[in-house]
Image 1 (cartoon, rainbow, N blue to C red):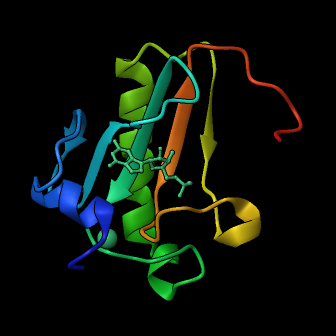
Image 2: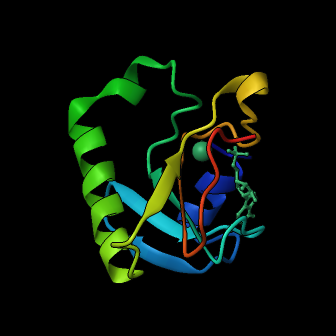
Length: 113
Ligand code: 5GP
Ligand code: ZN
């Protein structure tokens, strides 16, 4: 999508610290980290939110979660981390291109805010 921030990052039009990428999935460090390790895992395909049919594509979700596993290991998060996917206004979604936050290297609180 033309004006989507994450599509621009995927195309290299906005700089980012990429930690992983292949033809389906990429991951980069959040510009406003909420934990010492804060990485966004994003499908290359523009899917606006988690209620789109494509967001529940099993093949894509497998790729996303394999990427999460790789990053958790390469970042040294075996001791614990949190995955967050925000949806809609109440969920605090600010970018309309689905993404999974990986937060780690600090103690998480429950329930989340
Ligand atoms: P959401 O609020 O939609 O769950 O998450 C969007 C995330 O994208 C936020 O944590 C925000 O800091 C991050 N973000 C927004 N714009 C950029 C950007 O240009 N570069 C990077 N690296 N992260 C961004
Ligand atoms: Zn997009």
